[in-house]
Length: 609
Image (cartoon, rainbow, N blue to C red):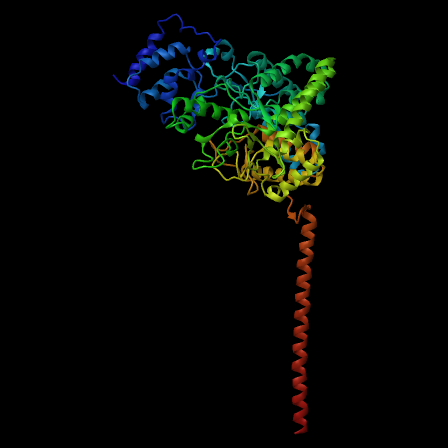
């Protein structure tokens, strides 16, 4: 009997049961198919999926216990049998969410009136429609049968990044929120924030993304900053009061679970790092993680898996930033050591979070908490200055707690202390900007590269990423380098517009070396959509829209509109043509006069003869 027929017989017997076996959804590993290691290993190490994420996003047709039992009867496990098993027991990827149209979407938000370039205004109109394409809500079956789905049920609709990222993601949403607010979609933002508050109340933190397999790690803790942006836009103080307890709970999570103490020159500092609560292969990248651990002992493999997940928690998945900086296998995944690194950007973000918590506490009358959070913010800011400033590189850099030294390489995370307002040391700020200029990282055609290390990792050279461009532009503004900030904003708008004009797509990442070129490398193909890319574009249009142009050639170090350059070139062409014409006329006239003189001489000498 073929594998498919055996499975068909097994499934037909299911109709004789009153109902599939009930499974409690209280435990994450009881509510997702990936928790069965035998099933996960069989499918993820097969050749059925180009992207491991596809399998763990598949909803089940029946409860997990029944599917587990059916899989146990599958002998032998062949690719044909696995394919038949998929057809019988799984639904289509993406069927656990449905499209949703935000009610507060408008075709022409007030932002458009500030955009002076007609081409950019038309582009903004098209990008505004992308919010409709990225709107999602949870399929009702997820609420009825959460144990059959890997997606996390949340109470409100949301905006997704796009492509393979079918669910919401934590730090992506920070820039999505900025774009939504620029488009005056504050109700959609409030729904998004309420979802995150619900997750904090459930898990103590906001997971990396909206799937069960992301609940062992978070991402940069930007929720308080999103709440602050929402409050600044709406003035809704009641909302701040309602969510404040959850914001404190998330902050406590980072203090208690992600903080280490380090000593430098007999002085102690408490700073945060990334450390996922997982020591197994990531379900959504199972095969790649298993291959990275080949040849390692079980203990070493577990440590590797934890550091891989921790790098995913950082959002920089992956970069040489987290890997060995020297040695035979430097920059390879099997050298990753994320938990040993104190990231400068994470701690800058946390210092900003603590300052915003102080401001919000004061707004709702919690004066003691306002004082305490302000002190925490100031202490962390001083620790960043003491521990993470490198006087040789003239940059704020990561600190390696195991090697007790700075990470000796440029990463664009170095601008975050300036962008976040954590550093107020103007001499260091000036030195840092001068260093960026001397490294020539601000001169690339497609934006500022993430690092200067060319690797196959996607958070390295030559890739440029929207959130890091945003941090850099904001840093330049806060450093009082407004013209540099505008030049980079213009360049970033130019490369995004060029890509869209050529392909109709907005990319997740771009290539620094070529205007309009998508980025590459990493664990998957470049994705389109794209939530945070659109968010950064709308932010820049909101702040610089009266000056930005869709295509601006660079002349020296400044940018000019196209029409003066056209006139200059035209005048030059006309002048050159006139010069040639006059020269030619002088030549012809001279030649004719010369010939005439010759004839006169002949006539004269002839007459004399």
